[in-house]
Length: 151
Image (cartoon, rainbow, N blue to C red; front, top):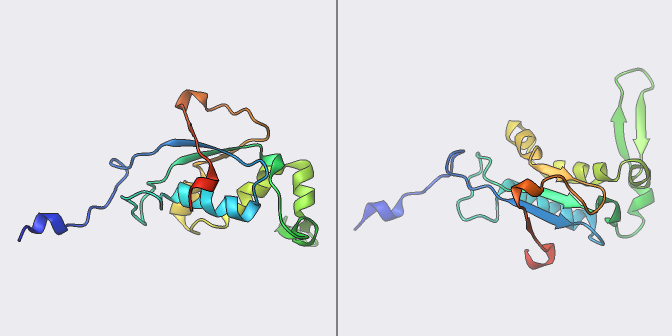
């Protein structure tokens, strides 16, 4: 019996193959888009996925202003923040965020689906959300990916 064939191979920073992926968010539902992007950033679609290593891809999301939410979530959902001062609690709806900074809506959704530790903060830096169809990462030769083809 060959015991070498039964060894578990764990990826590390040197052996991880990271790619650049472009995703068009036009007419995509926010939650479904975010969960698939979080899996891409985490690397869960790769055969050499290792939970404690950044082995995911760099993801560029374009057309962030065209993402949609189902039902009444655009007006009923609330995001809370606190300035640190007395009476400094701020409440925003997704409609408010879309009006001022549409990219933050996707960033908040994806960040909430990543681990809450050092690895999660490192993985979050692999996400690039852009308003409009143009992005500044053409030098990396990103591949276009249709989210409807992956599960």
